[in-house]
Amino acid sequence: MANAFDLSTTAKRFRFVAIAEAITWVALLVGMAIKWIPDPNIDSAVRYPGMIHGAVFVIYIVVTVVTAVKLKWTVGVTLVALLASIPPFGTVIYERWAVRTGRLAELSEGGATSRSVPA
Image (cartoon, rainbow, N blue to C red; front, top):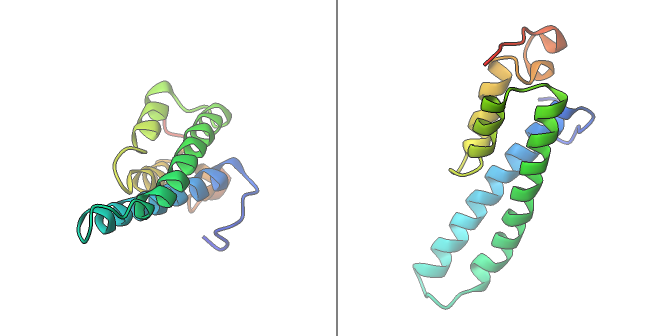
């Protein structure tokens, strides 16, 4: 991962958005803790992280569908990628799995020549 902001390919865009989705999820969880633990009236603690996470979540869904089409993922693999957006860090766990199994082949150690594993 030489340059985290290299968005030149579909797989690199997917990785970037998957990581961003996980980070904003954590920011929202921290905001919820700040809102409810010290004083339940701190609405701004979740307002901004919530808006940012919501936007990144929608972007993740769109990028996942585009990636699935371009990289010819099966419906099952695509559904798992979409469901990975629900638990915190699920998108990062999915991205690591997709790299390891060749579904994001260009990010694998073998590069674009990595094997493609059917689901």
